[in-house]
Image 1 (tube, helix red, strand yellow):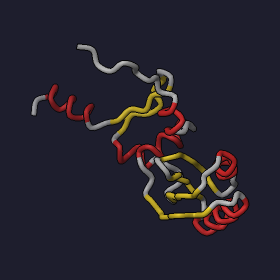
Image 2: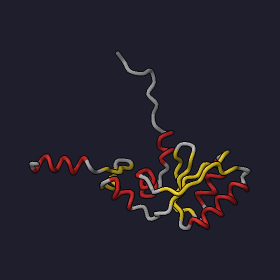
Image 3: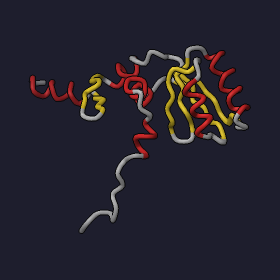
Length: 136
């Protein structure tokens, strides 16, 4: 493989994280995920999931990071035991039910949230909507 082709392969194998035009990180997806200080993470589905419950989860001393992913939330945790107790307590306090919970490996999205402090679901909901569809 020639030098130019090798450079392109390296560039294409990397992801960049940009926030408001500022480059936060460039690395392979695996390396970006490995930067998550919290290797312990939970995916939790709680219904109903109110804004107040989500705020309490975000402010918990046992939860390092929080992001919404579809109907679930991803929580970077310090300790599974303490986080599970806290999640159960908060769900009960808010009259919600834990529908599903599982341990997960932090994803690229989780790495983005931890590096930027921004919730991907909030960013996606603030995307400008294109009206009218494609033009002929």
